[in-house]
Image (cartoon, rainbow, N blue to C red):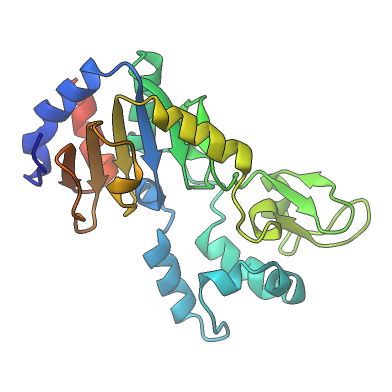
Length: 245
């Protein structure tokens, strides 16, 4: 299968056939799948941080647990503009993947996102490399808090000990969850089709000799002969693909 970068609409038939013949397809998703749900990707987050006149740092500075603990007011003000969007809802791409699972064509989703939109769309077998927004704990007593607490308090503090509450992925200093990584590797190792959506991750990091469909609005990277590139927004493409199937 040659690398294919034709207009998205012209590839609906090819992609549809690959999906219909798959018995263990796996989706690997990044920030680009959620931009149509109103959540910025890394470029959008960088633009927000660069435009802020009181913050002088990048996304890694913002998410540094020492910074969040030292200046929780600035952390939470910018966290709400960048990562924390509890009112966001799944778009057509999330719903398409959930529907694929119900028809037996999609074995699971591996995601680098923390927005929980795959589960809200109905996907059940999801490997979240960095966890999700629902996971927050007190930095002192480790009392757990859902995202409702974060949404209701400008600077959330523990009801038990009064100390600061921070998202787990920040407290872990962006460390991934080993169990989620293992689950993701197992899913991908058994895949007969990989849907790579909304991420610039190099296709060479995925199983060889397995068809890969890359849906991303950014410029395609060089891949292998098993790769189809579709340069477009994920939500619009999968909305059309759902009608085609």
